[in-house]
Length: 107
Length: 244
Image 1 (cartoon, one colour):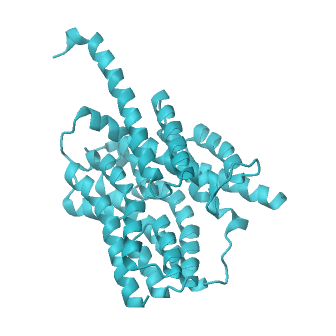
Image 2 (image 1 turned 45 degrees about the vertical axis):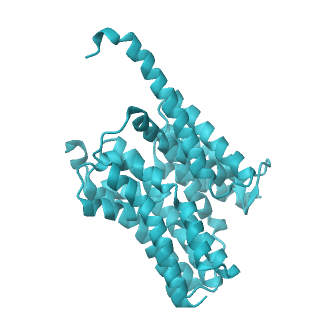
Image 3 (image 1 turned 60 degrees about the vertical axis):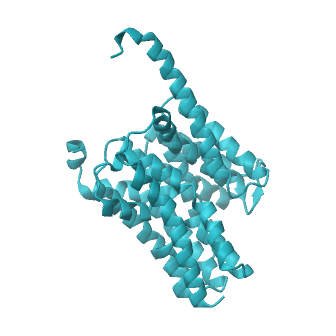
């Protein structure tokens, strides 16, 4: 693919990415929604974060990794505990990365 | 909504403390994307421009693979659309907090609505910090760090490609752990989280690798809403006499 054609492809990618990001907020804000929809939208953050998180812990290089040696999964325990206790995103990221780095250094 | 509680906190702290963990994740992942992009044969300029025009990690990484496979533009765009469609739900979920924003603010903010910035804002907005300027500033810092990471990666090319010794690859999973736990306030949240996570993995296992997140979100949120509204009906029934 030429650079020009790939640039146009990226513009298309940008457009189909931007519209779903924009249109719901654009049209729904300030509108009174049905109570069920309102309740539904309140659960989107928890549902989507969980749906993104578990695959990021269990899938590596296109394979499901349920082995005991899955470091991503184990490191989630101290990281999760840190999040629970400190309520700090920064502390959680530091603890998670530290555990992963130390285990990799030892093994 | 004017919130004095948040105005008393210094503007810098109000922006940098939520943005910092995202930045820590975006620089290494942006770097990895930059390396992969130029190694796939995409020009350095286009590799960097994609981080400006598209700004969506998983779709960009996917596009580098598709480029080297020589996939046609139409397929790349359609796949990008499907993979990024989940942002629709995030945009809808934040919409009620943007009531008083100007149109240009909504347009600018939504351009930089990613999984990570969404998670940060859904937490901040629920805590009451719903002003447009700090929200847009956080997004701008996040995209800037993504672009900086991309530029460094695209320039480094194949000199460095392994971020594993520094465990930088764990920054984003760790951030999702924190953001998920910070959003869980009651038993219904726990149920929805476990259910959404399991559905997402099961769908993936059955080969639904591009729709799994959005489908799991829809199913999980529906479960939450059913639990919530059936609960409210019980309460409404008990408090029927006091109803206006």
